[in-house]
Image (tube, rainbow, N blue to C red; front, side, top):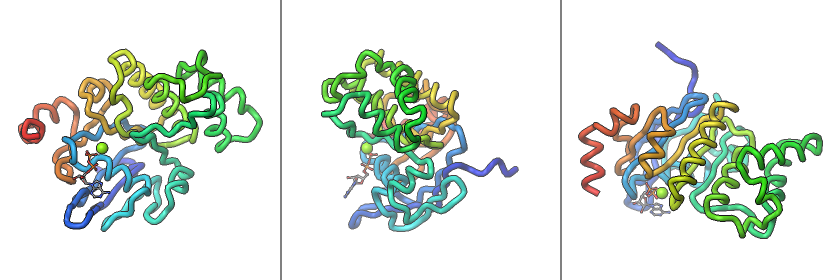
Length: 240
Ligand code: ADP
Ligand code: MG
């Protein structure tokens, strides 16, 4: 039976770098409001796929539909304007600006002066950054910076938020906080999540479905338990 139209659908997406196929005919769909993790060994093509979705890279072949339209050929900021927001692996906050100023810059892209200060305060509270509001972002801890990054990405009112390794290098406590924040964003605002992550405890806690990439292609997809017990998935990870 045909379900509701997917929020995101790639069709035969392919990226070659010289002789290397980094993305191998990937057809991936994400439903509205879904929480999905993308896993796979190093070099599987996870970050490349993300860059194709954001428009940082152009595909060699294939197409991308998002929210009912083809977005191939749209610049990265035009994709963000359509509701496809991203938090990259490398932090991109403005270090010389305070936490509050970073949030103001992000939030004012979506709203005028009316209610802006309230929205900033609400975001500071939601991401547990009230005490750090006036600190330069460069002085934040790694975990606080990650939370600010997610706050900035979600300020752009996305219907899908892409995240590349949001808990890499974080403590178990900070990782748990990020899981809670992401589930809250998903449940209270209906934001769909597509998250690349190596941390399997994180993936178990967050994902409703998991997609496994291997050598650029989708190896398998499903609920975490069935994916984790799949012998081909075990082989790929053990053979790393
Ligand atoms: P992952 O994020 O899963 O670790 P990547 O998407 O970063 O994997 O890389 C997939 C493959 O593509 C790797 O073999 C990597 O070396 C190669 N690759 C990634 N980016 C480039 C690039 N800009 N030029 C050439 N090869 C690249
Ligand atoms: Mg990567």
